Length: 313
Image (tube, rainbow, N blue to C red; front, side):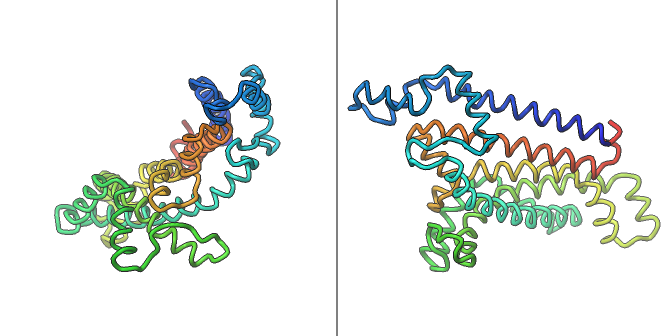
């Protein structure tokens, strides 16, 4: 078990290193002079050269990469050329919106997706199965930003239950959570639809195993067989999807944050890309990559806990 975890840790560190190289190289190879783009077409050559020196663009690539990595370990991610503030503080401020949004969306997706998936499997071929499968098809077909527009039209413009966008800050937690509810629901519904189908398939597959039939033959109630044997042993594929969904919800919130005018990390990435703020883009891209790699690592550990056979692999 300990050796397996050490191997996974080594793979985790190597993947992070390769991801950092790719993120740096891709942004470094973008066409155009970032300093000239930031200053505009009317900028003088000496002004552009001064900004290049300030941003470190006049240094060789390997020097800039090492400076970036060392800065990341010491908490100095550089200074945004657009906002004029430290990138670390800027990202932390935006994560204070995006992480609660993603966590709330994931909680809604898991509650709806697992609940509907188990109901569909328990009522296979009957009304609960048809209703849950139909809802899942609708959820997969409709993109999250379209749900967001529909929610604004219905709950904000027509019913006036929620504001159409914006974020009031965490000084008023109740108002902040209310502002995140509609965007979280818009993000959650497509993910809940995917989770419904995965849960239904996984539970039905396990329900056909010999140990489940044995449990039924012993006279256990249908509810106990379902939750204690079928659902519990179907958790590996469900955990896989949930792990992937959390990283997707953080990295994929760009459109929904723009629809609801939320000052999150996705909106920061979009604005920085439009303004060619390379320092912010690089750190946000690495944050997304690191988040995906970390979640996958945690999912691997969850496998080891859920399935003892993997500990001997």
